[in-house]
Amino acid sequence: MIWTLSQVALGGAIGCVLRFLTVMAISGPLATLTVNVVGSFAMGILYVFLAGRMQFAPLLMVGVMGGFTTFSTFSLDVLKLWEAGQTLQVGAYVAGSVILSIGALVLGVGIARGAFA
Image (tube, rainbow, N blue to C red; front, top):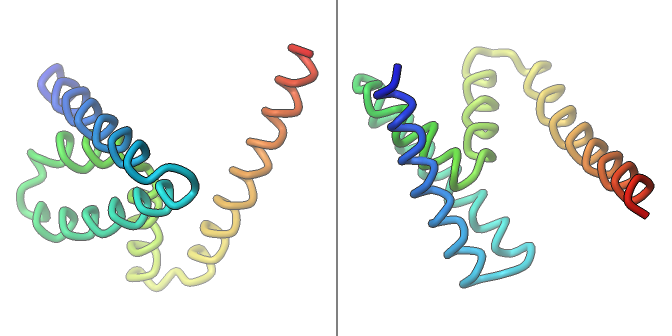
């Protein structure tokens, strides 16, 4: 377990640095879009490449990609649901993720502004 956690930690550090450098180079919403699209593309490649080599998944898929963008994991979850023929779940998951996440952000901002105003 310690080896797996070490892989996740190292990969997460690498992914966070890559995200930071991307945001510094591009900035604004375009940086977030770039990170999400590039991360999802890379996750697709890793998903296929690591299918028989899951020992590298904690480092690359969880660590690096998780540190770079969790949107890539969201995208992979959508693909897996779609490939499993669960089209209703795809719609609910996508809509729910976006709506609930934005709603939670707005709620958090409102609470924080009220509590610290």
